[in-house]
Length: 65
Image 1 (spheres, rainbow, N blue to C red):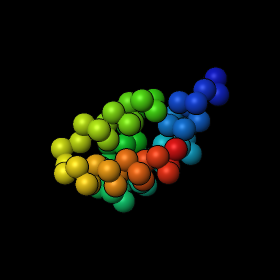
Image 2: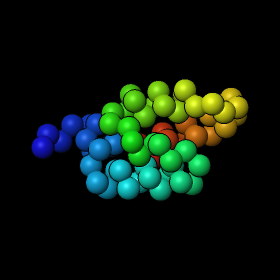
Image 3: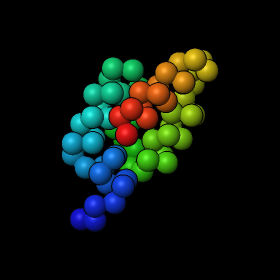
Image 4: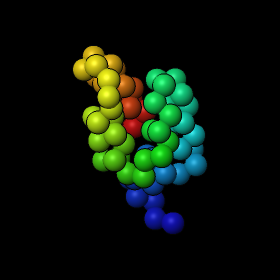
């Protein structure tokens, strides 16, 4: 498998585990279902949540990346 940025940051087993744990922590379990960095960030942007909550989740996602 290619070691692309998307693979290392989002789709490898360790990354998926991290996103599952982060998703459980911030109560957005679908973070682990994303397959690219762009998709992950777009998913956070599209959440039905307050602006403040989205900013917090985005900050956590950026730290996870």
